[in-house]
Length: 244
Length: 244
DNA sequence: GCAAAAGTGTTAATCTTACACCCATGC
DNA sequence: GCATGGGTGTAAGATTAACACTTTTGC
Image 1 (tube, rainbow over the protein chains, first blue to last red):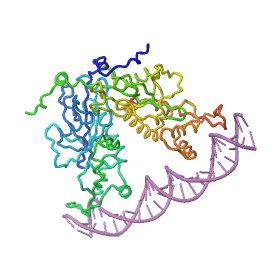
Image 2: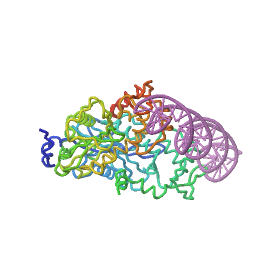
Image 3: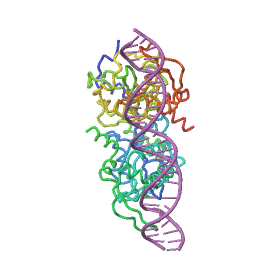
């Protein structure tokens, strides 16, 4: 007899499977910043004995009454004081033994923030910026998570104007190029770079110049206002916009 | 006093947060197939009262002792009898009220299978192929999941030789082009299509001809063996290969 | 005047697109 | 012999890659 013909309601379904509601769910944030011409990521010294002396990403368990996509915002606000950050879900890691506390599945997000943002406050003194290139290993499977997010960032950066979240509002083309080079890990031709950026029509010429540079100052630009609005949003918010 | 300086061990950490281990985790599979020049997806009539008469994706709760990435394989084997399928994790959906049974977060995968595979057996008679283009709505948030997976498939298809998982081993260029058109929803120029495919060097000419076609038969090709090995693997397996 | 970086254009190569005719087969 | 799709090449346009010199400023 095909049991599927008997409709169940959701309450019965839940009771039947209650033993399955026994997996922890967390989010981990790869918070990228840009400083000293290097791509950096915010890490905290692990507070677990098992990973003494190692660093880990910033994350937290998802609360039972919070949307999955809200959790990384909470983490960002708690750890950096910043809201309205750019956030993108990347991948969910669910290996059986990835966490010593038991079964914890984690959804990884990456975030781009301006390290000079006036509201940025990293209060905990165990939290620091680390150059991505210098990171050899991390607690848990966080090195894999970092690598996955970095690969995704590199891919996205070629297509959409998201890197501006890593810069202050005003920047020169040289600063922008340095940033692309830091993210992609390659050198770019200056003329071709400027041509491509111009073609994309992302920028507004501010008719201002750099100041206090020990050489000929460059022009300052900013991201077009409409794009800045669009690409400071998370992918979730963009997705909702698509639906409307 | 900064509490973070007191190292916790994992056991204490778990005890502290036990109330958080109260979220269900499931996987949902968007199983794509190709038949009658249409992209199809495998759906089941919902067995929940709340969604009576609606269809939903094939999914299941993740077992406490199973890797997240193994769960969709189990679903595939249970529902289709197929193993070694192409599977790719796409996105995790964790809205608060997405499931009437309570808090269930789901990780969506898409899969590509050959509807003519000799081992394919869809035993449950509530499970059927549906043309993707005809699907207007689904139970839960499954329409959103389907759309997200379709968008990802369209993107991947342009870059990597994965569509061959939807075809039998031998195929003509016409069949291949029809498939691309079905997935992308656009028409392609035959000459340019053949040129691009030739350039990519994905195919081996089998020196065989189509049979039983009511017109001039086309040549048959297959995917190069090495690529077939690589791209029948899931992204998890490919990722592991990268690490080695 | 020298060091440092800004700013700028052209050419060759590659890739993409659009497009039309003859050919082989089944009926 | 006719209907159906198989098979093929070329030219124009767009994109990308490589490459060097002059200008402006701070010191």
